[in-house]
Length: 250
Image: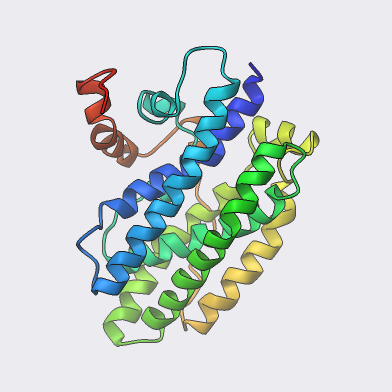
């Protein structure tokens, strides 16, 4: 097994899986029917991407792993998602700000992965980019509505930005795996994306009449397996069926 490629696929897949699960928690709880359905569809888009990454990971693994065992049967320390995506659904503003901050990065990442020397990763990125562009447009439009809306919506959006923006620095803290994949032409050099990312999101944040928080970064090692307590609660729910009824056939 190419362990480095396997671990890189976990990094790519775990972000979408954990954020997809967070969005799935909102099904039936959106502020309007249209928005509720939109968030649910974004969750499904992310899970579709996760399946592609994990099917590929299972294919290159030496053991008898499947996409399901990779998704549901790892312990907390073996998940490689950034801390941003596991943050709680405090309110609708937090959901939108978290989504926007992730979407701005995810779109740039997929654009680079389309040029990957790994044909399967490139194909996944080509398939996913259209969805990612929609996600970014959706969350960006909602951010501007909230920030430039009522006094209450503006305050909630600003509070969410103050809390979540410092997590964005982790996107660009390259792990050894990401450095290796970049050197092989499989993944991008994340530092190259950093300036474009912040330029893009700062423009939309300004259009939303929101103010950037003073704290610009937070110590975060999610890609190395060190998570907040939020992930433990997520996994308890996410893994319940697989662990309670192992090898169950549907």
